[in-house]
Length: 137
Length: 390
Image (cartoon, rainbow over all chains, first blue to last red; front, side, top):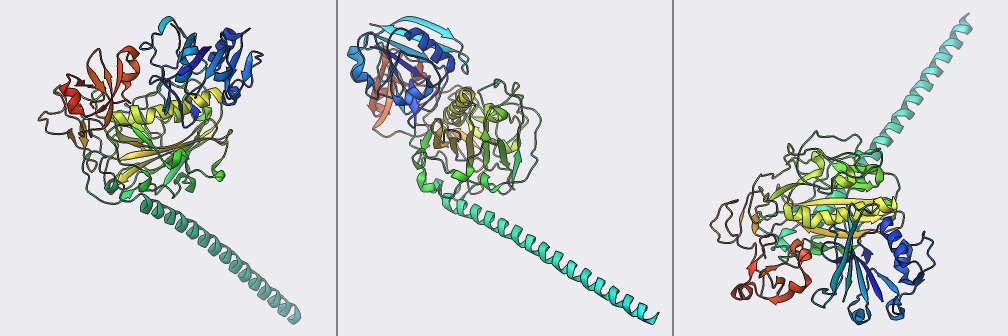
């Protein structure tokens, strides 16, 4: 699976069971990147993609157990540590802002041998700079 | 002729009688209105008294909240609330930093609404003592005290008038794109909120201990130098406590164009001039809290510095015999207990609180979690971070 996660400056993902942030341009970018593949997400995440026309989206609350090699998984609140061994790639989107957080991305990337292979900045619809980082083993 | 005269007198008497009846009726109506106003006033006063009683003894039960202000009842100044309704055009907010500098002081227009007063269910017992780390704590399981009657898609901003000590009260708004700024924030340096001191410490990020903290952040309200919206807050309260919540709300509004009920209540202990913290409540309207829902208390503390909340005076904590801004190493605000969790940088041999902004910038390979005593870490050759000063 190829993991997609959005984090703030403190590696936070959610606060009080709600996403820290969202961005329309980021969604469009994810949909463009995953076109022709499968993009898994849960019902909570589906709500933010509701207005997009995206046949690649597969919705299942247990999607991390369903994803096959090469599938993309957009994770907002699930603990992904137990699925790390099945991950082929991790794509981090950094908001470059600080939000309150009580759910954090739990994989220590460098300590676990993940290498940063690409880093790209882009302007979001409500974020001045979003950084897309791609990690591979 | 005589008959006409009698008839005329009779008609005049009837007219006078009708006039008196009309006056009596009008007077009765006015009395009724006056009574209604008195009842509303009494109800509002009762609500304020209930809140004060509910929050009373906050710092008595909260010894960890830095310093040692004189024990007294805790109060929320909210006697008079003014209201403004912004009708600005939509545009990108100029700045995310709710601090500093000058300009004019836009004052309010309308009168208070009782909805600016937080619910009485907020109580001091809901606020845990400051633990020595963490800029905020969830209150009431993160459920704000708004009621269904508060839901509205009409933009408004209410700011309490300053009390007799010059302190801010509750600030309450329905923030949305209309209330957000359309221009760069101006200077607010001329505003001196209650307890204000200009003082610098080397252990404080940016040096200045105090910031002029907007209750409702500029990026949400476009309120620049409104004295009713600015309190004396530590840098830590401003940047680590309040700003992340403002960011979350601002981004949500920009992405969804929804409204968010947003209320900030400064909590003062007795006659203290500096607030011990602020209660921040927010709830998104159109999706009934699916997007934004929080209720937190942000502590007005600064690691490494003791604040006298009565006056705003401050000093380095502990026995460090240094004066502010000397560049000397500072002692921690409180000596953490043996079981405190720290984040170690195994490369630089610095240790941090988990909430320290430096932790997010740290390489994962160099990051290590440690739970134990501060002294042990120092004995192992580690140094406390100068930013969070653990």
